Length: 222
Image (tube, rainbow, N blue to C red; front, side, top):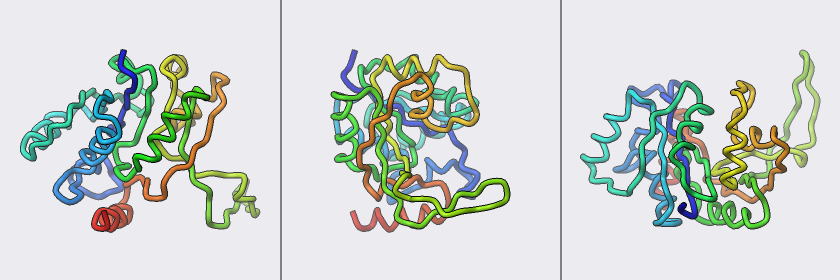
């Protein structure tokens, strides 16, 4: 068993990006977004086990793309499932780390400091999530009405979400629930408390053309 595994989920087809290829394959500089994401985890720990879930119909495209650009960071490609939940279930069959992170393939600007905080916090917790405080005023909508809400009571949730291996596997033994969109919420269903650590503001999820323009700005400043 290796010490750490990261499951990078890149199973979407990116309809909101409006491109002919899934968003994870869009170039940021000379590399696809997904390649940048893989690179940051390799930089954090060259021995980390990297598992990447992809839509099955795009696996050949990805293999051809990285061969053309000479991208050689080792990673195992796994066919994604119908939903994100099923993709991670598939990946867990191959994961061998005692600590497992799950990260969005289109979050290439997660900092090594954020990743470090997540994994280190597993010394004291079984489930760790990077978050940011909300700066904007927020309002809660309910049954056609809305009211001001206390933003201090809320956080923006990012990835990588990190877990003890047994905790994550137990969570994924549950049935698929469409209302659950992240791993921490799934783990919460088995009664495990969630520990927060600070994320970095650049750790955005690139899903729209506007997000891509922000990402290009971040990239140019690196």
